[in-house]
Image 1 (cartoon, rainbow, N blue to C red):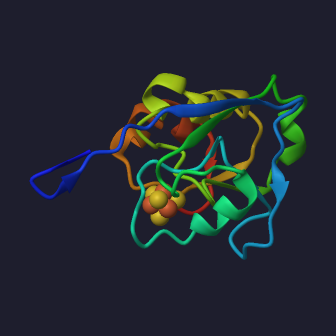
Image 2: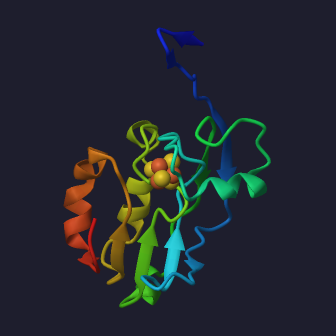
Length: 145
Ligand code: SF4
């Protein structure tokens, strides 16, 4: 839909991805030991997005920025095993995309990591992150928000 040069896109959550466990993926990034992405896709849809290559793996027909899959996972068992490790949240999605306000998957992740001693980095362009300051400040911050 277009109006006065503005393109409106209706985003629908496409899938709920149910994982047997939350995978903190070993990371090759110099800033982290592990990375985690609570969503597939990113509805901020930045023109300059470096993560749009992910569409090759997601099996979506829509352009990058017009779909979002929400990941669901059970409680992380023994989160203390990540103590002292650096965890990067949001390497190929924004963990505080607008849908996070309802789905709270990033907040759930932070709740599950409470007391783990993991060192946290969060990449976001959204001030929704401020909602979770209570949890973030309770975790050891590694680098920055
Ligand atoms: S917020 Fe980040 S991941 Fe999301 S579209 Fe923009 S650059 Fe890509």
